[in-house]
Length: 62
Image (tube, helix red, strand yellow):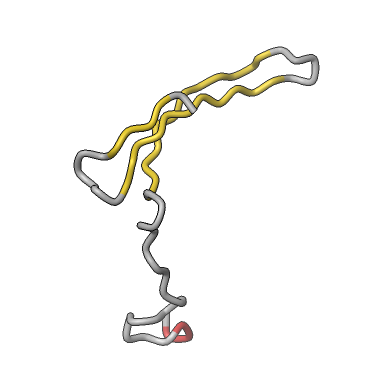
């Protein structure tokens, strides 16, 4: 993890920067990149509804 900070536009989430490195079997680096991802803060993850709940249609009719 390289950096964490709160999101300016989403108070229930934060921004995380991470570095990913891929190696060959001989411990030679073959790829390396930095990603920035949006993650929910602790206690702010939304509750998931079961598949099809609240859509008005049963799964068989989709």
